[in-house]
Length: 137
Image (tube, rainbow, N blue to C red; front, side, top):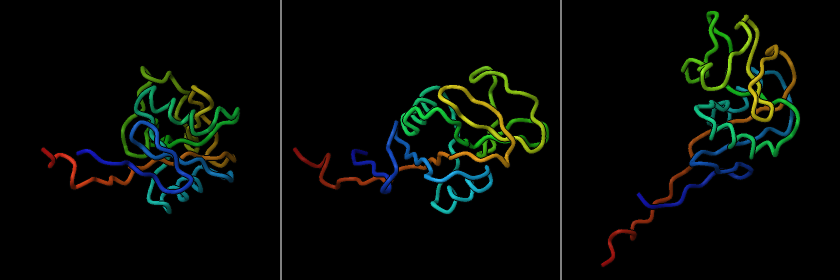
């Protein structure tokens, strides 16, 4: 359907998804709650393009930002329950309890979930469809 994709104020549209960088920092759980409170989730990286989208949002700040990656049952898992793919983004350290994922530039890193970082949330945009498109002619 032809239409407009819109993101909420302060959110940025990249590649058909809305992204938001927090102003404040906090631990991973606080970041996740902040995203959920806004009807979104910590960003899940499916491919290099999404990594670049996040990079556009963070404006190449040199610090790490929280992403939706955490260790569960000795495995790295994204918050949407998809497993982490080391072939795509590189091997991370052993997934010990209490460690969560951060993104710094183009590299995924690991930090204690209680550390302080900003975070990036991601959600689907609003779709505004135009009823007149396609009915002309």
